[in-house]
Length: 274
Image (cartoon, rainbow, N blue to C red; front, side, top):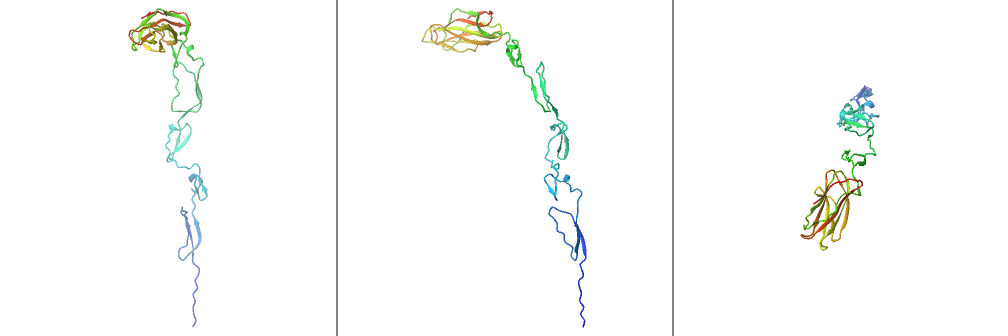
């Protein structure tokens, strides 16, 4: 009896395509088929200009201009004029004006460097070596400097004097005005006086005052012979230069004389003895 054998023929072929993914892909034929071809889909947008900077996608490096701008907060008023920036996906053109180097010479009115601009150059405020008190008229303040031109300077030329001796016997730290002169021209004056005590067991004190306020150095002596003191003090027009005395105890004398005012010029002001 004859036998019949069946032989298997080749499987039909099929083609497949796929789109790349981040995870990668494995392409297999369907059951009963073999793969004749595999098509990997391309994308015309797979170019550097569409890939984030720092990323390489399928061998294509990202463009340095492709960045995440979502964190940007700048505004046009915070960016120099003519410059561009991207803020949260939007192109911003700056509007801040730029100011180059400039020099300003002080005058009678204020000069202002306006806000809201970028100083791209050095801004120089001119100085002048002649801006000193001696070059500014007395009584005038120029840029915070009080003028002394024409004002008196301390010196040894005595322009006012009250030489008679006067005393104070009110003690316990009480200061009493004994001599006074009104200043008729601003300047620095050399003030001198002599001081003595009536009893060497007790001190005598004296001090120069200006308009009732102590300004001079406190002088103290236990000497019954005259001791002279000198110091330079600055006064303005119509100030009072005053000499105050103090005794240690009631009934003990502090004495002063030769209250004198000196400058470098000849000028006279009245002395009033108190």
